[in-house]
Length: 424
Ligand code: ATP
Ligand code: MG
Image (cartoon, protein in one colour):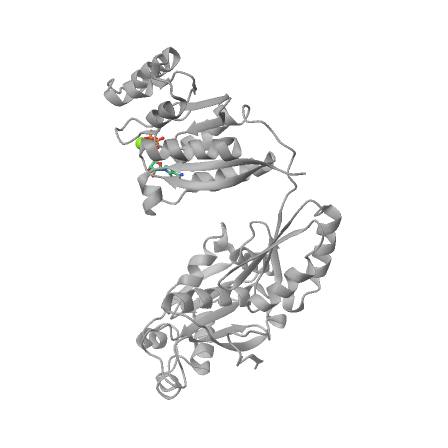
C-alpha cells in the first residue's frame, strides 16, 4: 500500500527567517498520515505573491495536491489571496456569503468595517471560500484540472479549526496508513547500541529510523509488514535489553518514567542542583501532579549555599572541591534530610567553558543519590559545550531517577567511561 503525496507550503516571512517555527506543518503531517497521505515536500515561502504562486505551481505539477497556510489575513502583507488569483489566472471577485458572514462577525465584536475585512470578502473567481469558525479570514480551496489545493489561515488554532471545517470532509481519504510505533530508550550510551538494535529490526517491509537526542534514543518502526505480530515481537526483544534501557513508547518522556516510579513506590524526592541550575526540577515539573512525589529542592550553585542550605561541610568543599564524589554525596544526603524526602538526588559538575582542570576537565559531573537503601554516586564526563554538558547532565539524572535504586546501574557509556558507581 503506498500513500498519496501532498506538498506543504507554509507562508510568512517569519517562517522563512526562522523567527517562528512551522507548527501547522507538523500537525498536518499527522492528520495526513492518518488518512493515508504523506507530506512529500515541505517548503516555507515569503509573503511574496510570485514566490507563493511558484511554490504552488511546482507542488501541483509534481504531486497534484497541496495545502498552504498563512497570508490570508486582513493586513496588507497578507498576499496569499493575490498569489492564488495569479496561479489560477482568475480575477479576485466578491464572495457574497463571506461578505454577509464578515459583516455579522464584525458587528458581534463591535469591530468597525475596515479595508482588511473588505479584502477578505474576495476570492479568486474559480476558487471556493469556506467559513472560518475561529476567526475572520476564510479558507480557500479548489479541486480542478490543475490539482487539489487548500489554503488555510496561519494562526495555529484557526488553522486547526479550518482544517476540521474545510479540509477534513473534503480532502480524499487514501489507503489507511499503517501506524508507526516509537520506542524510547535511555542509559544505553549513544549510537552503537541504537544501531545494533536498528540492525536487528531491518527486515523486509519494515522501516527503521533511529533518532538520538541528548540522553535519549527513539527508535521509529513502521512499514507495510510492521503489524501487530511484529509489534509484539519487538516488545518481547526490548524487554530483554540489559539495564532496563527501554522506558517508554509514543509520546512517553523520561520525566514521565520518573513519575511512574515515584507514584508506584509512594516515595518522595528532593533535589540539590548545582551545574544544572534547576534543570532537573524543571523537567520533573513538566509532569502534571508531580507535587504528589516531587517535593522540590535546592538550587545550590555557589559553595556558600551548598554549606548553608544543603549542609555540606566547608572542609569537604576545601579538601575535595565542589565537583567531587564527597560533595555529591553530602548534597544528596543533606537535601534528603533537610527536605524530609524519602530520596535525595544531587548534581554537581563543571559545565564550562571555564573552571576545568587536568583532573576535572570541563564536562566532569558528579551525581549523588541517597535513600532508604543507602547511598550511591556516579561520575560522568560529557562532551561538548556548556549547553551540551548541562542538557546531558539533566538527561542522565532523569535516567538514574527513573530506575529503582537496586538496579540503578552500572551502565556502559562511552561518554562517561570511568563510572564511579558504587553502593555504600
Ligand atoms: P491573520 O488573520 O491572523 O492575519 P493569516 O492567515 O494571515 O491570519 P498569518 O498572518 O500568516 O496568518 O499568521 C498569523 C500568525 O500565525 C502569525 O503570528 C504567524 O507567525 C503565525 N503563523 C503563521 N503560520 C504559522 C505556522 N505555519 N506555524 C506556526 N505559526 C504560524
Ligand atoms: Mg496575517
